[in-house]
Image (cartoon, rainbow, N blue to C red):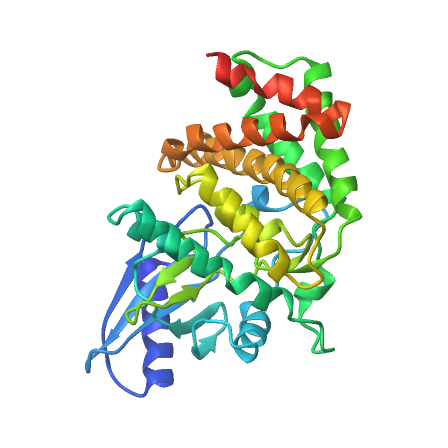
Length: 340
């Protein structure tokens, strides 16, 4: 479909859903995903966001795992639970017309405010997690409850890291034994996480998906990837966010504050161990995706965040090294980043 045809389809949906003439349809810049977005403005000054589905990036999910489900059911579930998600105005095949939360992400705001203000916003965002994790499957058929962070996801993250990032960590091409060591470490982490309680997770609970609305409240977007995961997963996404520089004393304080608030409060040792282990796999995947986007798509915007990502990854691996010899070996390999 041409850009002009897409804009016309968006315009027609908006005029039907909002009941007034559309003055402008403007494309918005995208993130790492391939989905496209437009801002719609009506003649009276109202605005909305059109979310347009596109052909999937084959590197975006593990082989054998179904594509992300439709946005509608999980958005409605979050809305019923009182979470701050966009209202839905209407839809057409491949397009959802949603409430416009504006352009000010938590990340964008952090670039122009003090560290204390950023920390306050992050703490407010973390307060959403106990509410999210209390959402249970009520038999509504929402696909998120049939999806979970399991062995194929950990194998996928390991494969991405081995193919795109391990050479960068080592400063040379890896040997077969080094590749196997990283895959073994990620598989061990997957087995450890398989023993954890599972809670509903947003799955990409990071600063570019948290928007600061006009009234100062936070809104949550990019909802369709939700799945079941250990209770630490979304906290890793935000407190180990590649786009934010958060002080360690703040991260430690927020983890101590958050843990007892979560449903079935995890014991402290397991909570902190899984937080570090999930950081290794999450940051490994993120680093690899940054390099993949630059190499395969020519999109170099995210390379600026690669050094911060690798520091968080290597540090988490060192902290978790005492848990198992496979993690210790991975930590030793990743320490090469610090030696250069």
